[in-house]
Image (cartoon, one colour):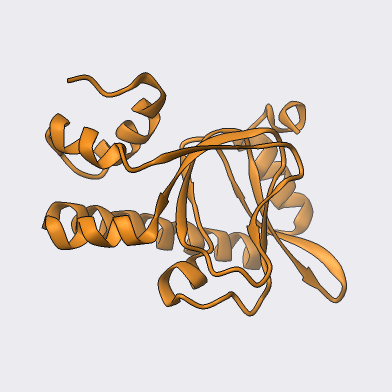
Amino acid sequence: MNIPVNLLPISFFIRSFITVEEDELIEFLSNFQAVSYQKEQIIHGGQQVCKHLYFISRGIVREEEKFKNKPRIGWLTFENELLTDIYGFIRDVHNPNKKYYIACTDVEGFRLHKDVLLEYYQKNPLWERLGRLVAEHYVLRVAEQADFLIKLSAKERYEDLLNRRPSILQEL
């Protein structure tokens, strides 16, 4: 059996954290549902409880919330990254901050229902290990983001984004 071409980015992402047999990986990947969103389409948000983990294959998504009646962008998710409203995903309640996840560009990706993920955690400790390692990865990313917010001005953060991702202005 071979991994379907459209699921290769997710398989590379998973294999960057764990070693898994191909047949097990194919079974796991078969639970992902393909999704696509148009630019400015809301992927998730408001008073909804997030029940999915998203993998972005192509495009850019922003996390946005209103602060003092102005939209504020808290996070950008790029291709080959995961996205979820972690508050709702973990706690099974709506996020009191009313965050929205909005496609900045046309977006293609996949989503996995939380219940399926939890079943895999119960089935095999390998999948639970994947969840822990991915969580650790994103905790470090949040810590880096906090450092940026504290230590860099808005202009310096913008310049850093342009240095790390020179094509972003063309993509948007």
